Amino acid sequence: MSELSPLINIFKEQVDWHQARITFLANFIIALIRVRTVNLTEIATAFNGRSKVSSHYRRLQRFFKNYDVDFTLIAKLIVSLLPLDERWILCMDRTNWKFGDFNINILVLAIAYKGAAVPVFWVFLEKRGNSNTHERMGIMYRFIQTFGKERIDCLTADREFIGKEWIEYLQKEKIPFRIRIRNNTKVPNSRGNQKIKVSSVFRGLEIGESMILNKKRLVWGSSLHLIGLRLKDEWLVLITDHAPQSALNDYGKRWEIESLFACLKTRGFNFEDTHLKDTERISKMLALMTIAFCWCYRIGEWDHQQKQIPIKKHGRLAKSLFRNGLDLLRNIVINLTSKYSDFIWATRFLSCT
Image (cartoon, rainbow, N blue to C red; front, side, top):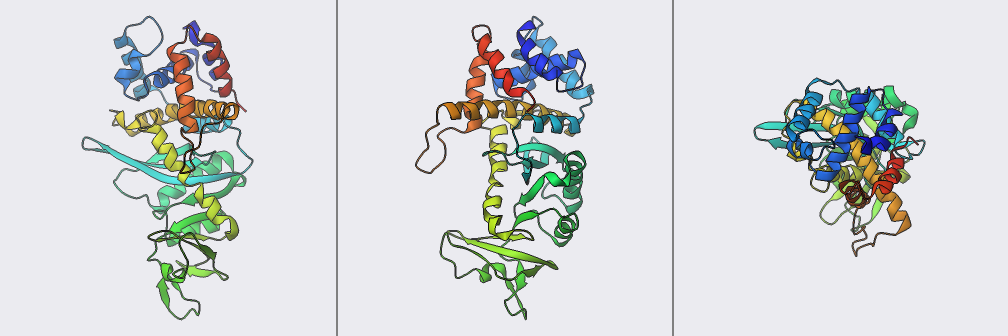
């Protein structure tokens, strides 16, 4: 186990766990990066140490079944791993899939960070479909209690996250927002004498053209700025009560949470491979995955600064920063003995900033 000492020592500085749990954490992160799947059977084969694979598997089962994880501590750890600005653009979204007849439906609150948002809080929805206002308020409450409102630059969210009660809550709490609304949402016309579809307000725009209305309009009883962008086949319409000039640019960061979900799933750790059905155990898995995600992302970001990743014709990097870091780190941990000095170097990216 001495091979993992540099990583174990890093985690000792960051989490208030006893030695056995910290050793497990280090072992799990390394195994996850090696096998690129959350399937516990596969992870057990990649654990360091002389124990049999069956022993490693039982150890994994005991951790996910019995050990209590402080998710607020995990959120603070995740934030400490990234060189974030003083104020953060938050992204709220859901990811969901089915394992057999079991529905996994997770509401996630993440921080936008250079192309891929980083999850800090999440909650399992005991149902299929959209979250409700109280579930969204609950996850925002956890964030505010941990980091404070002063950290929030704005909240971005897609068309699922709408409604009178939700918007009133954000305004009451003074949380700036950039939220997309459906094209058929009814708003007053310019004279205020009838309600029309919001898409009609922006029908004169050319493809790629955007516009901020001069005056606020009532949306679900709240006086809000409306910003419209004409897409090829529809309109992207945002509501906000704060600094409408930057709303489209801020909302663009929302797509980073989509990149996150792709990294956690098929492009990275194959989250959908989990056979866990208990939501608390899946939450623990997501916490550990996020730590590994941050490590890979930091290394990919550093490598990109040293040698620029080519940009394709569509304007995106040929390889994402996360995947770049994952490939580099995976090569190191698969060849740990021969690349031990590289491993020691890599652990520095997990030091709290």
